[in-house]
Length: 337
Image (cartoon, rainbow, N blue to C red; front, side, top):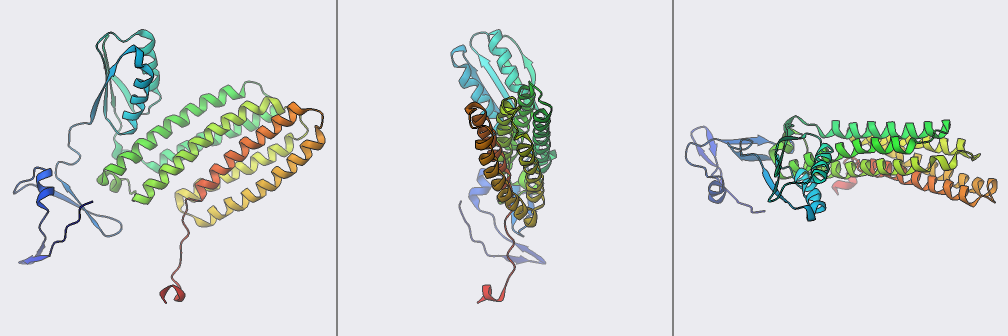
């Protein structure tokens, strides 16, 4: 970061300051051009050239070859997350049917990305959502809502001894991933575009925290899918009630952690940590009872332990989200000494 020092000058009733010539040159500005000035929440100011927001759409062209389809898929994800508005897949040879279907499937997993044109050699997609109209908190809450539903359905499958719950949960996790990619795209765009960050009301620390929180929610979705796959293995154990109680505690931790993060409520954050301590006490009790109740059934014991391990990973996600809420320190006489 280059810093400049300028002395204020007064002309008439106005206070003026000169702009760095390097900045003027980089933005191709001339006498009479307009610049935009925004006052930030910390009372600093941001300066933008008048063409910000009107620049050409960011475009990227990804070359297609059948031999590198895996690399192409990764490049599509990367281009989306880096904020490209138009993604072109261009081949020297025709795109095979299977590869075309795979590319379309990948693009369907990316919210806002739509195929606008295609032929035998090309697939052109465009991001059709307005980043300025998106809301990081709403996307995060949407992820949270889907995850909460996944966990409730898993518990219901445990109580009703329903087979096939794992496949249902896995399909729901795909929607979590879609929202996750959208949120990461928005956060990255705000990171490189301070004007967008200002419109979204996101400070630098907010951007970092949202990135971490989004990752924790995405991980929680994966762990719930993992937990759901273990449900059939513990149908007949006498410990179902205790495992269910453990799960109910996780639900409460989830709710409080997201509320704490989105409202910056430190009291709710502390409650999540206290609940995790209770969670650990319950885990110890379940492990002890499991060893006594099923001493000869090693497979069942392993299933119970795996379920507990998955639940612990889910619970830790909510603790990590709650930990993002920073404590508010009040100024005391000692701090001024």
